[in-house]
Length: 114
Image (cartoon, rainbow, N blue to C red; front, side, top):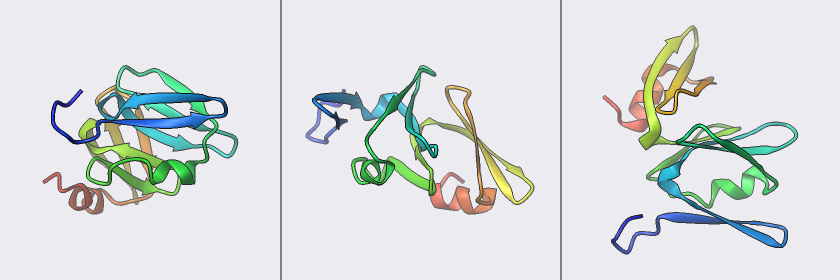
């Protein structure tokens, strides 16, 4: 947890229950047609019922980026970005791999990882 005044966690209300997560422990969030999942830096994953569109606004834009219509990535958790045809493969530090429809060069400039 950060010691400055910067907010370092997010609260997600799930019905009568609230889930609180440290930003730094979240690797990425993705939406499937049936559910939204939160993937953590330790590789664990949980399904949440909060709509993906609601989640987009809960995360700081300087740390979490919407890379397509279904994935929000913690840019501090990216290990590498590999070109794959017209798409890009993002390998996270927790070894999870995401395929996104954005060219590697575009992603690198977007994340300012040069």
